[in-house]
Length: 600
Image (tube, rainbow, N blue to C red):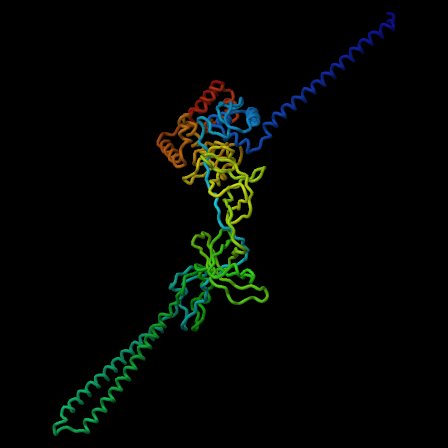
């Protein structure tokens, strides 16, 4: 065969080269378009995600807490993307409405309904439970802190009054003793014999005294007989004089025997005292600090046995500079700050008239009032004296808990006619758990001191009069943090307590979920005590009823994995979800088993 024309071959090559160029151009254009589309999609997803995730944890928690029980149950049944859309719609609705209550329901809010987080929704919970305080006007005086110490007014080494051998020690170091309690005993055998001997001496002396007295009586009788013979011839003057002298001599013998009797009685009493002193007793109540001797030791009179400190009658001693003595005159009551920051009152008892020449201070003794102190105080413990100085002035004061820190400054929520309104305040000095208010409040106003963390202007509140915990599930009107300062802060899921919040105790949550809408409204309108009684009655009724049969895995899922249960819930329609969340635990188990059985 002959060769092909060269021109024809070149034209066919140019054609294929042109086709390759067009194909490469189309591929490049398609790749650029795909990259642009991917970038646009990522930007859109990131924007939506940031709008849902850009909210703070407290904001998300407030939105969840502002939901009703049905809405909250539907929320926890959503997928992660639905939750992000829900938060995004809530954030947009909050920007459009400016946080005001009322208005139309958001499109992403399950169940709709009226009222924003700031107001009470129809069929929702009662207003937030708060505690109130008063704005008061009271005197304020400048104080100067001086460190002092607690000292014991009674502390001594208990000594033995007699010598002898220690037979028994009845206390150890650290033991507490009462006044008059025996702490040690000496050997008393010799002392008992000594007391018996002295008692015999007393009997002997008494007999001698009686004999002498009888002799005097006999001589006086004879003297009277002689005296009656004075007018007769048988009377003898000499005999009469002799008998008078015998009476005088016998009377002296009576006096001598009486003195001997007293001496014997005194010696007997001394022996008895020694026998009594063999039991060494505590002269005042207190604690044993030191035990100086042990059983078997021989001690002399005056030797220390134990050291006792009376920690029930403590005083305060402080070295006050001479320039500050004008603030602590005798009899003045001042504040004393203990180690736990609590304040007690103490009266100045005495100022010791002896000045330290180096420090230019004088010792001041104060008697504190420790009757209301729960902490056990001991000797040598440090305290701080708040010594007054300067002139006393009248200030407006409020409790420290009433202050709420916001970005715009410090505010206080003022209570009036069931609602609260914020008042910007300027605070001054801090004293005794209070703040001085320079501007913003007037004496006599009622302010919120507990449950004020997430209140909003114009929000309705309920005053806690039964001592319950403010800010709990009874007051979610503002979407505030449930439970006040003690609330669950682990995430967006509300915590539970005895007040009936559905997030903590599964049994109580199941009881609340089993209620009808009308019963739920009545439940959330109950007081704290009524809720406790309600749960106790339900628990008693549940314990009396036969226990329901659970699945292999227990719980509402009956052993079905959490992800599969969530997928089943998300696959339900809106009406089916409402019916599902109104079921009891047993009905939910049967529902899951039926769904799994139908799918298989």
